[in-house]
Image (cartoon, rainbow over all chains, first blue to last red; front, side, top):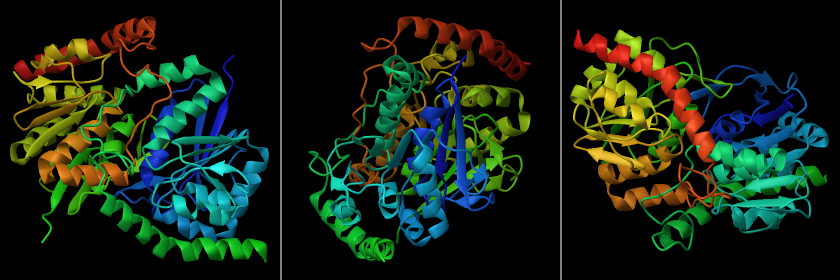
Length: 228
Length: 228
């Protein structure tokens, strides 16, 4: 019999929807996978990309996750002041086999106290702030530390998902999903990360400064609330 | 002033949601982009991945697209018998700057008569059937023929989207989106397409046979209806 694997992901307003929809697409092709998207209620949630996704469950009703996934985006920083959401993350993390994030979802794990002393990664523009939540910032697409798996920015969620599927079900299962999803990337440019030949250093500088200006106060406030 | 670019994508039951949500994420970061997801009505539409997306508009109310996008998935083959959907695609295509598909969305373009004599691509498992709709099947991640741009399976939609953004707004605009999306892929396996070193030839054989068994009758019926 195929083992059931429950993926419970947070869905929230202004999520960078590909942080969520990329990994969930790959997970959904793993035999036995169940996908749950949780929010306070089940009214449609507006993503960052001009359309809404409907939660499948609520914080109150979600089943215990085998894999807890927190995606990122500007909306993730609003969650840092949402005690119900943070309690949900902490509670789910206690029983999950894997506690995971993509992109700036790492800051939600951090605000819930789940990255203390753990190696972790996040989107490049917010990476310099990751130490604020007690993490050991690590530059890689996917970082594993114990049962905590974090992925880099947005599309890194695909590499993250394959890595996680391999952990859960073996390398061959991950290869089968990769082939089904035709994940054989051939980007037409080589600009996908800071330091790549076609990446604009000025864009990197501006985006990093902008992330710090808009997000650092929210991250610091969350850390102070947890300490108090 | 930034030019408005209207992306109108089809949303339908059992869509492979990443065919849609991948490209739409990248498009949404292009300055001036407007994203519209159209279906018969605006009730939530169940995707293939266990959750629903809400259409932003209907076939009757959608604005004229600058870029028309048809995603794929098993649900795309149900559209081949949906005259309202096919009329919408044909009507939109008449006024669009670019007529595009990802994955098996190509068969919807084909059933609407838009691939006649055009080079095109689709997901590898359905690629051998592409000639049935009059296309010139071409093996590439992204194929352009005139104003028709088709992408390969699922995650090829990211390479497709960057190619299209470069067409619309220049290479530098595409590079900026690529960096923002951290699209610097590092798949942990090399199994993403038939013929790759870790791709299982038996999975390729089975999936191709399965696609033909389930889909060829629907494609042939659509072609016959159009001819009659």
